[in-house]
Length: 246
Image 1 (cartoon, rainbow, N blue to C red):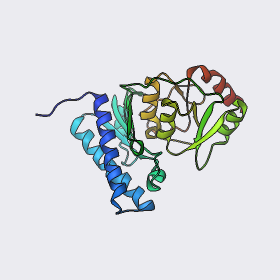
Image 2: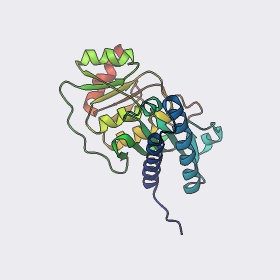
Image 3: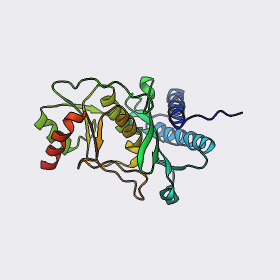
Image 4: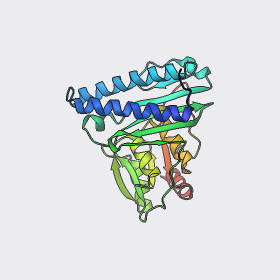
């Protein structure tokens, strides 16, 4: 007899298991470089899709690695997943990559789990972290390969230290974990890049929004969601004003 688990438990279990699969593949030596990243994307996606179909057959799914079915737009419950966030970092055998499993309910990021397999961690919206006080100077996360001009400009205005890092999930969880204070992204993302991180960050009590201050909305016909701000709530008004004046 199968045991029914909550949505939060399911998200966490799938994220953790997918992470373990990815680590096994990474350590196998069967693939290297871009071939490793491609294999990781495909294998993790296949597992996640089968697990969700088995456990939540009536829910819709939006995955980076699946052909989009716009019938999902009529669904209230949609799983939004990124099987391997940070394919480049994974293929380079770094630790700043992630697995994102989220459930959007009526457009809101209601459930989320972000696995950081390289660090042996899974962070979930069901068990929010205790926020650490912001550092002085503030620490702002940026892409390690292509920092956005807007983020650099705001960091200079704040006197913040730039912290380069890989995947979106790794950056968002660095704020949740107290390793950084601000994640400002303007370089283009999709719903699967930030739905699970947004759910975890919101549960932890952080400010999460678009860069105009509006909320993140999921399960849109066009899943392009280009910008994001995650930070401590008391810093948000100042940062949003700076973005508006940039």
